[in-house]
Length: 131
Image (cartoon, rainbow, N blue to C red; front, side, top):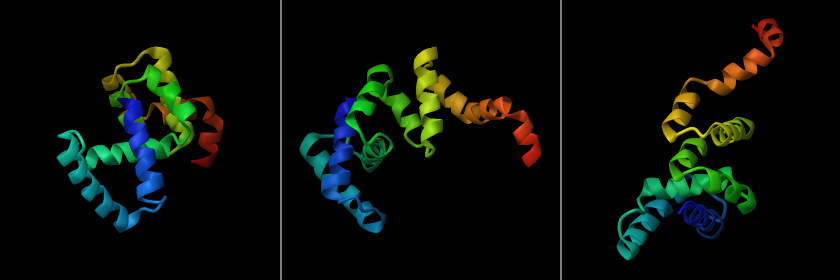
């Protein structure tokens, strides 16, 4: 299912939005959600399509996304895709895979700012100097 959602996101980004966003994108997403729901049933809400689109933006290459989706659930992926910083996102992906975190554990680690705390602990002198 994760790969399907990624492919839907790629299609929306490339073919429907033509890599444009803003107001046009909002209207298109709503219209598309209504059409998909009418044609294929529930499960294609505006929010779901936004998740699909964001997944395609966060993981633009299929090879990279395929590696992630093989080890993480869609719930994990939805937590990770909204992390803007690619390094931070990769940090959580890798730790999640290595430590076999549940989606709840992943969300707790993100909320507790594990990435930032780990970065600070590895460079405490730099952190103190900039404070």
